[in-house]
Length: 259
Image (cartoon, rainbow, N blue to C red):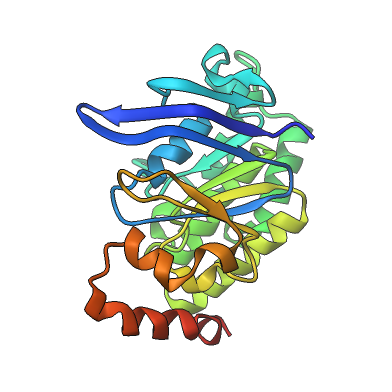
C-alpha cells in the first residue's frame, strides 16, 4: 500500500540549528500517530513539512508518491489539512464563515460555494459538534469550542490526512477528553491523523503509533507500549536521574489519568 505522506532522508534547519536530519517515515491511510518530544525538537516543523508549507533542506516529502515541491498549495490542501496551534481571525467571522475557508482549495476563480461545498461544511461541523455554534462569532468562543471549529475548518477540506498541532493546548481535562473522543471518531471515519501531543497520558488507547523526537537524535517510531517507556523518555526529555521515580510513577498511572 502506497503511503499518503512519505519522508525520505529529510533534513531541515533554522539557520545553523539542525531540526531534522536523515528522517525516514511514512503515514498510511487510517493511521493515528502521536508526535511527542521536548520543546524545540521539531514537532511543528515536521507537521508543516507534511503540509507543504515548509520545504526540506534535503531529502524529499511526497504526497501519494508526488514530491510536495511540485504541487501547488491548493492541490496539497485537497488531501492534507493542517490545524495550527493558534489562528488569528481579525474580523468578526461567524463559525460558519470561518469553516467556509476550508472550501477555498475547491473553489473556481470568481466562483461561489455550491451545494457540495455547503454539504462538506455541514458534515465537518456535525462531526466536530459545532453545527449549533455556526452563528456564533469565532473570537467569542471558549478554548474548546475554538479548537473544534478549527478542526471543522480542516475537515471542510475533506482531507485524507489531518495534521493537528497541539490540539489539547489550553483545554481543561474535560475538553481534552472530548478532543480525544473526536480524534478517535475521525480515525474511525477513515481519516489518517498525525498530532503533536504534550500530555503523554492521553495517547494510549487512541493513537496506534508514536513518533518520538529528541534534539540531535534520530526519531524513534513504534507503538505506545514500545515508545512510552521511562528509560526512553528520561533520555529524550533530558530528565535528571533523581527524577526517574517521578517519571515511573507518572507512566504507571497514565491510564488511570485517562480513565
